[in-house]
Image 1 (cartoon, rainbow, N blue to C red):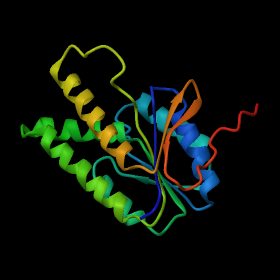
Image 2 (image 1 turned 135 degrees about the vertical axis):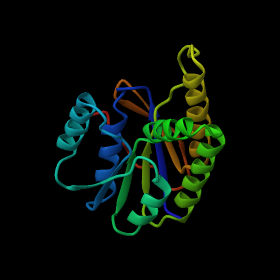
Image 3 (image 1 turned 30 degrees about the horizontal axis):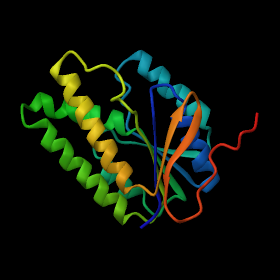
Image 4 (image 1 turned 90 degrees about the vertical axis):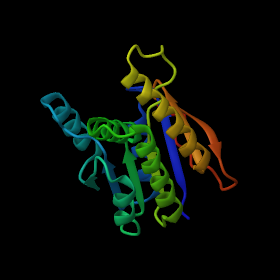
Amino acid sequence: MSRTILITGGARSGKSAIAEKLARETGDSLCYLATAQALDGEMEERVKRHRERRGAEWSTVEEPLQLAQALAGCDGRYQVILVDCITLWLSNLLFKYEQSGTGAEDLILAEVERLQNALQAMVTPVIMVTNEVGMGIVPENSLARLFRDIAGRTNQELAAAADEVHVVISGIPLKLKYTSQPPVTVFDGGA
């Protein structure tokens, strides 16, 4: 089993930039597994800015729903795989399953279990980015509350299984967990 690193934090906290820096320190053959869907002009612009910031050294794989299968398909082909982000993946699944009228929560948690199984079988190290969504007020509608609950539970399960967990606040990472292997320095305190 390879190393799994989870990076969490609030929206626009600098999680992706920290994850990209950590991935570059891990190797030269870099895979960016994107879960975002550019469904409107604003999101298309965000995706474009992310790609420009990463540069040409990254191979990009886009998969909004079948994350476990995409990871398995990328395994062994790169030195590191960066998944950005778990929260968008969960929202994609929620919209898919809510529209079908079936038990969305159970179906999504089954997908999370498939992801965990895929991570355990990986040879390639995986860095995952997720949002910490449970630190604000309780959402006013049931769909938003369901999303918050699913995201919170998923983050807990992925953090428990990860070798390292970092939280990013205002662009500064704080290491919350690491296994007995030497930790990778993400922030050196420099300029």
